Image (cartoon, rainbow, N blue to C red; front, top):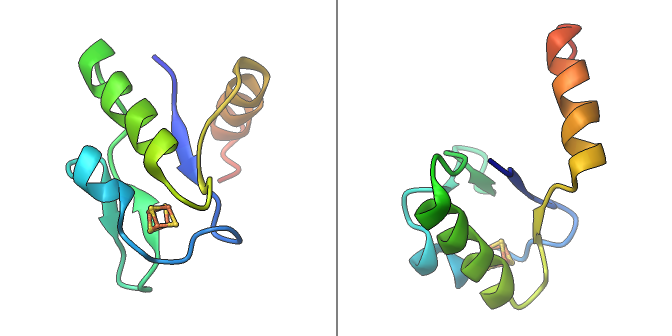
Length: 80
Ligand code: SF4
């Protein structure tokens, strides 16, 4: 299953896309929006894809497979 992230340098804290995936996009204690739950099935994946499309600043992005592999290897190496 794919994963998503919010690019903090693009996010303008408008909360517009959150309504499309409210269980997956959360506002942190730092006041920034984050992906708080990655999709667990195709329906949730589609919700986050829609949120990507609705973000006016293109701050939500789906990680490409090469980025996922790098992310997985970083996690396996204990580098977060
Ligand atoms: S809609 Fe986009 S720019 Fe607005 S808070 Fe969400 S991620 Fe940030």
